[in-house]
Image (cartoon, rainbow, N blue to C red; front, side):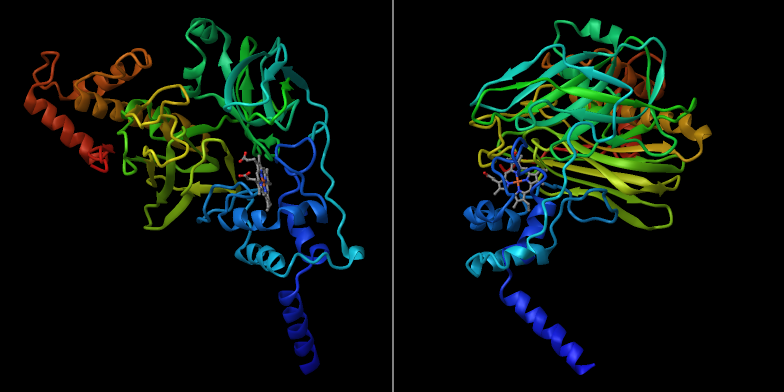
Length: 488
Ligand code: HEC
């Protein structure tokens, strides 16, 4: 017994004192870095052998200690995410002590094999492959590009999609894509107005960022594709130093089942914040949007996603259950617009009816924020372009009981209407000053709420009627729907 303990101690001390590449560092790097850091992938240099890792040792330590690499923006919370790319404190310390020890190689015979990385379609041959109609050229140098492309979906009958796989052509240059299923006629109406506003629509079906696995939908869930729909993708390109040509493909995998269920995006706030009056003052890092939504029925959540633009800084989504239990579902302290990641829950999360979801979103519009698109900083409002802002946390869910689905949708619609009413009351009806065109929807939704307070039915709200509306909104968590706070 004693000798076993002694042996354990000795080996612990030995490996703590002198980690080597082949025994300690290679397994860590191959498992956590090499998928992106190898030829033809997005990582700017390969990390596939001793020489390559040694060359940048101290730099790797700095980036892992700062938790910039591997890229993963969710802080540990109360739910587990599938495929989380987070190094443990021990792994970070190990890399550091190896560098401090002079980066010894160790016994070459102990070097593990490189992992096998799938080439081609990971899920096998798709039932239908969509493609961009022509190549898009990305210049060697310059700013990141955010481009929209429309893909035809040649279908003669409706199908349920059970899995979606995105395949970039030039992996080194594609950072992320968002895919939206869009009604062909709606797209026709948008012609000439730019496709930016589409991101405010609900039918996002694909979020792919570097290193993301194909999206296999949960059991019993599918995405309905009707003939005439189009796939619109927003692609983010990061120039690589040489001219690249991108031709993306999307593989759709159909289900044989006739009846699947569609997930509902519970968005807090609704419409990516469009109806919440986001306006981040120049110079402020305190501007905070708080909104709550109480789930009216039992729901099951599968994935979560946070979305803002360049100056988005922090997100937190907590669930307060009626039994008093609270869960942190998503917490991001250092948001990075460049990484649009969908966080898939390892196990579906059931939230009982009456659970209140609290979303808190913060922006940093100071000159010191390197992501700020404006110099000097300007007030930034909600808008469809990258230099505008948005802000929302999304929980991709279904009602546990299919019969409850309409009740969930109704509650979400009412929630959006309350934010519009709140915004309408506060800004006196001015919505976007022509910066973007939300159409009549928010105005109509706000009116539906505010009409309830038009006690004398004269078609407008008196000061007393407005006050009653404000009190009602406050009781629904909208008194601090958005709080304007700035440094000065
Ligand atoms: C999911 C893909 C992915 C993984 C996994 C990944 N990287 Fe990276 N890495 C990138 C990309 C892409 C960049 C280029 C910068 C960017 O886009 O954020 C990068 C950049 C870097 C840089 C240079 C940063 C700079 O400012 O020039 C270092 C150093 C680095 N990675 C180290 C690592 C280490 C160490 C690991 C593993 C512990 C790792 N990376 C895992 C994708 C990845």
